Amino acid sequence: MIEYIIIVILVVIAVLAYLIYQKVNTKGDDTVLTNIDTKLQTIVEAKKTMENLQGDMVDFKNLFNNRSDRGKFGEEYLEDLVRDALNKKHYKFQHTLSNGKRPDCFLTFGSPEESVCIDSKFSWENYKKMHEEKNPEIRKSHAKAFKEDIMQHIKEVADKYIIIGETAPLSLMFVAAEEVFRDISKHPYNFIKKAREKNVVIVSPDTIFGFLRTYRLLIQNREMYILSGIIQKEVFALDEDIERLTKRITDADTKHSQISESFRQSRTSVEKIRKHISKILNLDLDQKTLDEINQDDNPDKLN
Image 1 (cartoon, helix red, strand yellow):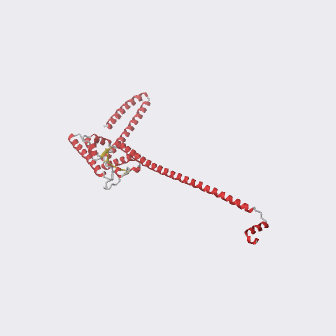
Image 2 (cartoon, one colour; image 1 turned 30 degrees about the vertical axis):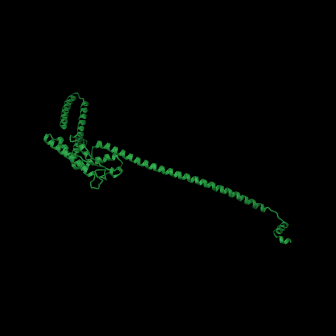
Image 3 (cartoon, rainbow, N blue to C red; image 1 turned 60 degrees about the vertical axis):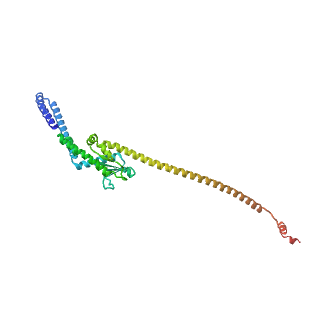
């Protein structure tokens, strides 16, 4: 429809340009004609740009119509969101569970019971038919099929990705298209409540961001708590080491004082001994005195 409107506009502009050209030629003025030609070229280029954009939109529509490409798009979209929100050590893609199932994303929080599975579900075919169908009865049939699709997806996520002792008691169902998620959240059947009854949380690109932010804050708080515990433990150990070192220094100081006193007393004894030796060495004894001493030592000889 837009193309026909543009063509009509171009025809009208062309006619006006021709009439203006005839009038301008009679006056010999080419400036106005040149300006009109420039504007026509601009319009033609704008038309080409619109056609390219329309082609891109058609390609995107074809992507949604192709089940395989659509599923891949949902998985890649989910991966991009998780990578932007979390550190890579806290998630795995296509992780294999003990039951052999592989969720699109596996969030690792610490213990196995706190790990959360996320799986992408698009639910596009019947959603598209439901909104495009003009016949009320056929549209009602597509609406019923859409409802069955969503309930089946919820059941699959609950049955495959919640394992006692291996995962958290809940899992996430990621709907990559916001318009599909809006229909799910506003549906009179109340899919959100039905999902929660099976411990499944349905999220979209907008709502999963809040969940991942909260998840990251919980991880950071857990890590801070662990680190603070380690620091506290090391401070206690350091305090014990300081107390032990203080006691050893005190004991060493006491022993040093005792040793110093022993050395002082030993030096005093050495000095006394040296004084006695000096006195002995300074004695001046002649032979007569020695004889007298010998006689005193031998009293029999005097008789």
